[in-house]
Amino acid sequence: METSGEIAPAVESILSAARDRGGGDERLSVDGRSLTAAFDRAEDEGRVPVIAEVKPTSPTTDGERTDDPVELAGEMIRGGAAALSVLTEPEHFGGSPATLERVRAAVDVPVLRKDFLLYEAQLDVVEADVVLLIARFLREDGTDDLGELIAAARDRGFQVLVETHTEAEVETALAAGAEVIGINNRDLTELAVDLSTFETVAPSVPEGITLIAESGIATPGDVTRMRTAGADACLIGSAIMDGDVRQNTERLTNL
Ligand SMILES: O=P(O)(O)OC[C@@H](O)[C@@H](O)c1c[nH]c2ccccc12
Image (tube, rainbow, N blue to C red):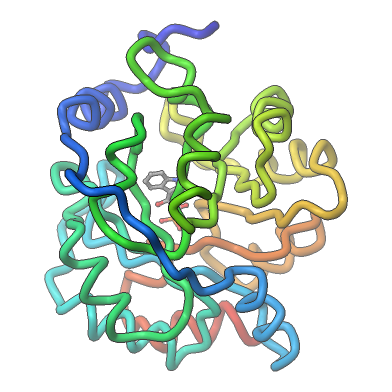
């Protein structure tokens, strides 16, 4: 088992905040919008399935975007995004559960809750269609087991995106029952992005699993590269948030 000492200091700080964050008091029951159906719809309409991410800031971004997230989400949809991702982490990403709630009420595409969820009660903070579970973090002391957390999420009606970075983590995700797997091009040790991560790890993901390329995708050429390597969809934050959100989304979905 790797120790948390190998993680970048910014990620350590994120995790320690996540450990201290409470959960909801009431068990949620969600009537979710299907992520795979949204991807199929985009494909049918000739667009690359993209999950566009409302990310006001991050430890690797300069400054903070303060526009109304609901307006940004609308621009993403008009630009052709198949689904949205909304950061709910407050301390390092400028997100909040309330933002996700408002965005989800304003759109009809599936919305992913992007956060660092470590135990079951944290699932009960806000309704979303999909929740992110990060394989790397769910084997540390004091966190729930990945398989148990996947089951707990599904019991509530959430679809689950399991984030991986290595072949070993893909194996862990598959063994835990993941059906939607993300490969994060950003490593959480140095926080550096390398698109060849997806190309290296993707072959270990079997047919039948929905596969998402995450992070560092900035140009139409990057999107093509991820698609060629087997991505069913791309998760894109910074390159969409930086500048004209609608135009950026169009450029990355209409190839
Ligand atoms: O802004 P980018 O490089 O397009 O990346 C988006 C997304 O992949 C990234 O925000 C992300 C991937 N995994 C995460 C886990 C938590 C918070 C954020 C993330």
